Image (cartoon, rainbow, N blue to C red):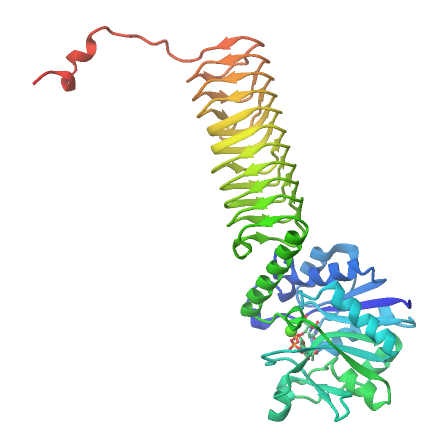
Length: 459
Ligand code: UD1
Ligand code: CA
C-alpha cells in the first residue's frame, strides 16, 4: 500500500456556534471534535497527519499535543486556502492524502478504510465521500452528469434552486492523489458568493483536466454530519452516545436504559458489568468486570476494579479496589485510594484519603488527607479535622483501629494500630497502639433531678 497522509482542517472560528470556545474544541461525548478525527486517523496508522490551525491555534495545539504536525492558517480565506497551508508538509510526497474537517467528528474508521479502499481500487485522482442527506441544507451538492459521473461540487450558497434539490452531499472527506491535489490547489479561485477559496473546487478542476474523479457513498449518512451549531452538536452527541453504548453492550456490558446512560468516548468497561440509569462515566475511567454502577453514579477519571457496587454517588480521580461498595450518596474526591473489600456508605466524603483493605466508613463521615489502615471501623459521624484555616494536615490511622461514633480527629494526628477511640471524642494528641482514648467530659447523673424540671411537673 502506498503512503497515506492526512490534512485535518481546524482553523475556522465557528461563528455559528456563538461560543468563546473554538468550534473544533467543543466536546462530543467528552472529547473535542477535532480529537475524534485525529484519534480515528491514529487508529488507522496514517503516516503523517497535519492539522491546519488558525482561530484558537494555541488551544488546539494544547489539546492535540505533538501527536500531529501543525500548519498555521493565519487568515481564514477558505478550505482550499487552509489545505494550501499544509502543502509544505506534503511536497514531493507520493501516495494518497486524506482531507478531513475537524467539525465532522462521527466518522468511523470503517468508513474511512472503505473510502480509501475504493479510491485505490478505482485508481482515481480524487474520491469524495458523499452521503444522501434527508435535509441537505447547508452542504455542498454533488453534481453528476447523465452517466452518473461526478463533475464537481457546488456549495449550498452558490447553488441554483435546481441544484439545491440534490440530496447527495459532500461530506468534506476526500482522498486525493497527493501530487494531483497540490497541482489542483494552485488553480482554485475565489469567484463565488462567499469570496472564499473552496477545496471542493479541486474536484471540478481535476475532472476538467481529464483526471478520474469518483464518489463513494457513505452507508450511514448520519455518521458524516458536520457540526456547525449547537443543534447539530446535540445531534452528534446523541448519535455518538448511542454508538458508544452499543459497543459496550456488544462487548458484554448490560445497560438497562441506554437513553439515560452517558459514557464518554475513552471509557473502558469489563464484561458482565451492569449500568443502571442516570449513570455518567467520564474521561479516562476504567471499570472492571461484574460491577454494578448506578442508579446515578457519576465517575470521572476513575479506576474501578472487579465486583464493585456504586449507587447514587460522585467519584473523581481516584481508585477503587475489588469487592468495594460505595454509596448511596457518597462523594469521593481526587486522590483517594480505596483498597479491596472496603465499604464507603451513605453521606461519606473522602478527599485525598487512602482507605486500607477491609475497612469501613459506613455513614456520615468526612475523611480528608488521611491514611486509614486495614480492617478499621470509622464510626458514624467521624470527622478528620484536616484544616486549621491555613494549612491542611494529615491523619494516620493504623490497622484494626476502632473509631467510635461522632469523633473528631484533629490533624496532624496518628492513631496507633489496634487502638480504640471512644465515641464522641475530640482527639488532639496521638493515640498509642492498643490504647483506649477517651477525650470528652465524664458523664454525671443527678438523681431525681429531672422531675423538678418545669416540663416534668405534674399539672
Ligand atoms: C464544508 C464544505 C461543504 C461540505 C461541508 C461538510 C467547503 C467550501 N465546503 O462546508 O461542501 O458539504 O463542509 O460538512 O469546503 N476551515 C479552515 N479554514 C478556512 C475555512 C474553514 O480551517 O479558511 C475549517 C473549519 O474549521 C471547519 C472546516 O474547515 O473545520 C469546514 O469549514 P466550514 O466553514 O464549517 O464549511 P461548511 O460550510 O460546513
Ligand atoms: Ca462545517
